[in-house]
Length: 527
Ligand code: SF4
Image (tube, rainbow, N blue to C red; front, side):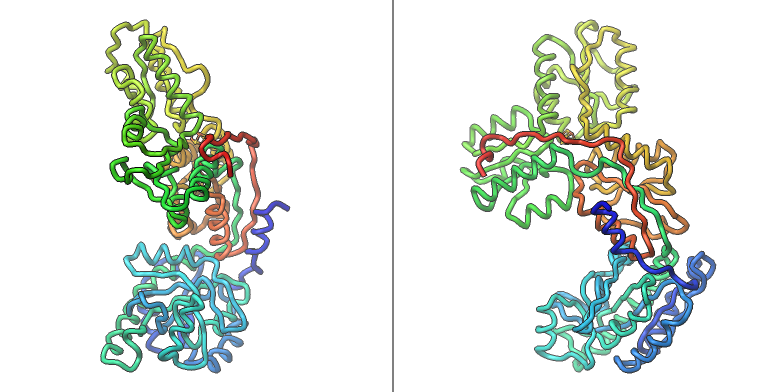
């Protein structure tokens, strides 16, 4: 069993019985707010999940416990516990929603694996949402007890959630609490009524998202594309920044995002990396890392003139394209660079010989080229292009300039090519393809396009909270891949979140394996 298969086994649940969404709200007022929010939601009233039922389970753990035991026997497909709660974290405001990642009564912890999916849906509905632990106690929380519970990492306290959650009994579970009171506005205060009303309004507004969450519940297969996620160039770039931080301490400056992924950037920022757009933002005497996408010679010379310590994390396969641009330009060729305007890699390569390199983004652009000598045209490619699209443009170049020189070896790198082939392979057998990657990641965007060209519905997601629940309704097989800059942990997070909607069977379609490693630059080689 692979690591991912083992993970899928962990999120596998017993088969759902019955159909429809059951919402448990402790108080009648809370139940009424949710019921009003659910009114008219076709996903639940007419969709595959059947009709929604909202019950007022009663106030406090004793009543909740009796109700949970009875509800456990009922046929329903998914359980949502919804109500108001006391905010523990200082930055919560009345009306904020807390979606539980887990609920705890101090003894037992019940995970709510699909929390990120529901939270994303609520945010897209315009609500303020946090994801975290909800703690259930047997009394109203006041004064310093809020601080004590907040120190454990809990966001909200209530008196029923952990007890009612037991009614799920292996079926999909969501817990949503709307903050009614906070450390600054406790229950007995002039603002208490306003806080309670704000919480009820948020509960009502959450209704449609709960309906979509229930409609998305069901057993699924996840077909993993292999290879996916980090390539050798990205691993090397991240390791360079980590080693620079270890050796020199924070801050270490990085020009541009080290790789195009929000999780990677946030993780390195937490360790002390400071990402800047231009060298002018780097203090004199500081250390600056050049990103995996490469830089132009002008940036290198600016760093030299300023006396900055530099470490170059340019991927060796990008550096190869730079070297080809220099060689063709010095031999008197006009270099057509097939790529996307504004991408950092393209800017760096154009900067190698600005007078001799022209950007070509489409086959139509080929007609605009004005070489001094039509017999001396060469072409190069951005490393992360879609192979089939780039081939069409190269074909147009060869048609117009039959003597056009091609790069010595493929510029589109092995990692891009392999991930595109793997995405095509899973797209053929999937109802939906999800590509983990950030919106500014060229190779991730190309994976979405590749899957779409293969006939699949495909979306780019930075993480599970980007998955729109309507995409999942009626979908039984999901192809899953990740761009070369997306961490493997994000893929696992997505599988875990899907597992919160029902049993998930994970299999992997590996079209090739990769064992490429690039050596580190000498500046950081000594650990
Ligand atoms: S995608 Fe290719 S060119 Fe880009 S960093 Fe990875 S290996 Fe290097």
